[in-house]
Length: 449
Image (cartoon, one colour):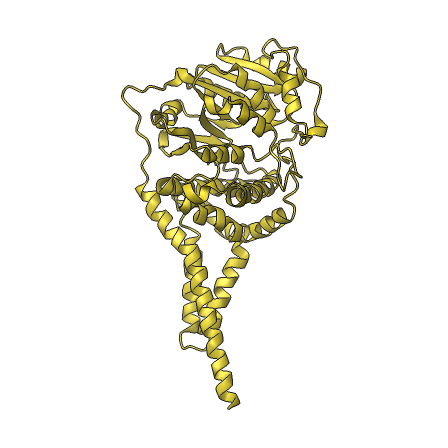
């Protein structure tokens, strides 16, 4: 009798474990399979023969805290080389103004503005009153554009429903020899490769974009220049209004704003509009990972539970990005898959075979999104074990970020300040700063009474 009860209990455990395994497996891998198909079906917006929006309709805003050095100079050269109508470099303080002008004054289309404080959001708002073109592109100071970048980026704006355009990003592979530095540069390359894959896939399915990258993104100026946008942009709070105002999370804010106000976001994935960037310096990269993950927790929670627009406009993205991001701890998820399968089949004749097949499936699935990188740089396969290890380590980063979501410091943009207590006296000596703007911008950072 006891033997029968024991067998029944084991059978019930196996059945429950099998159901758990099937749920975990389908929740993760339906997404992957659909994304592979969507990635292949994606089509970029074609460049029209007679475009209504051209390079002369573009102003580029480059907020910076380090307006000198080879990376900044290469960035400005690449932006100027695309023939944009105007480039506004926004620095902080009189000393930085002098540094920027040493290089920027040689370009007729480049102007240098001064922000009252080192805060990316405030720097962007400092420049907006000076924009006179219908399209504004926000650009980080360490990205590099190809010469024919703008025609492809502007093509989606032929559709009046498109409010912003995102681009494909890749990290410059530095190849410094087998070393710690080379490994972290490799890890950074794969980070953007994976993001590009998912961004292209979700865009093809339901125009879903969870993050319009702050590295480079194009907007209709009317959106960014709207007083209500600028006010909310400079006064974003989180956790029932207790945390803020936020400095980081700017790209998540603009993405949510567009979605909540009915604008479409187009991802333009073409070889001719791939921007390059520098990423992967250790330990700075780990600091960035923590900041990005905190941003993900804060913003995705807002999208799902506070604002809720994405449930109606981007249903696939809700499942494939927002909800998945909250449970996708590879270290724990893979362990759950393996454990639930083992509990379901451990008494069967093919238990070991089933476990080996699942292990092989998990391993191969991790290569799908990054396979393009290895086709381009096959020598990087030597780092594959390290990549797998980092993917599991990132689960701990993600858990730490969740426990410290209330930390809003930028972390990797050294001169930035966070919060209203760090405002500095406005620097209005430069002729390009309109008197009164600085005071208005500083007032934006004050906590509303």
